[in-house]
Amino acid sequence: MTELVLFWLFAVVAVAGGIGMLLNLRNTVASALCLVLTMLALACLFVLLLAQFVGVIQVMVYAGAIIVLFLFVIMLLNMERDTLGAETYPVVKVLAAIFTVAVGIKLATVVATLRTPWAEVDEAFGTTREFGQALFTDYVLPFELASILLIAGIVGAIVLAKQRLE
Image (cartoon, one colour):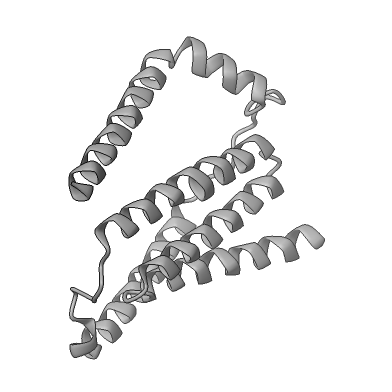
């Protein structure tokens, strides 16, 4: 019973954080902080699913490193005003919200009708040991390519920041 209450609590927090992120058009830092709230709630949901490793990685990678990079880009760009012009078109916001809710309801009904029962999963599936073995044996090349891509992004950000300072 407590798991169900915690699930709904974290689900509502995740959805509220996502909506807060979308609605904070003028304050991009507040939008990024709402994204942190969403990522933390998702990590709690992973822990409820007994996927502690994925929950910890969610906090470290997404709520930690990726949000820091987002905030770095926000501060680097120094966006001062809303470029979308949403304050002049409030009807567009209302129509977009209605459309999003309608599509979400339709998607939920389609998924509910097409859902199949869960397959039986091995007890060791998803453990840290299995994850590490798969990552460093079968997926070592994509893992290394991802690290090279991240290093290229960091070098690009440093080059852009240095050009602005000069």
